[in-house]
Image (tube, rainbow, N blue to C red):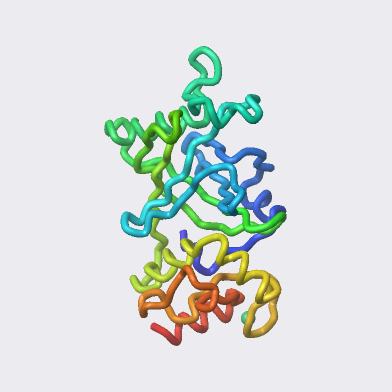
Length: 231
Ligand SMILES: [Zn+2]
């Protein structure tokens, strides 16, 4: 599916409509009937350490802490099982990663990722593939990390795929800054829906993703028009 022409910045209501569910937790496992969903929050005070590895082109999503342990949860190993042999969400995703690595499944699990920018404002990062999962020692406890590779969108022009991949990876703090600066509107026509983050100077031409000065809000129409001019 080509997400490029659809809206990237969505309200929580639009997210609910797209997923046909109110998503209350970060990790939402769905067994292959449709993509699983990860919700991310990467503000300074976000509870989990989710990072984009530019070199490997991998989004690293941290697993979730034990439920109901309050402040103590950051001192306890992230659990594989909740009770007895019932897998936690960490465990379910870890198992599918192992099954893929062992060739018990032919394709990796697909995970749709949304990033929370502000209350009610979400960014659709698109589809990813779960290529690997690890249990690592961080501090004095074990945490899960899930390695997600952006699933290629279909587009006739490879340059477009390249640019789209990098639009998806603009750091969240830059997205928030640009959203506030541009007032949540297309910088060309003032439209308030169908919005995209656009590199003023394209990434492929050396434009930066981590500098708000090089990122602007454009509606779908003006984003497409600009893309057509560049290619
Ligand atoms: Zn516009």
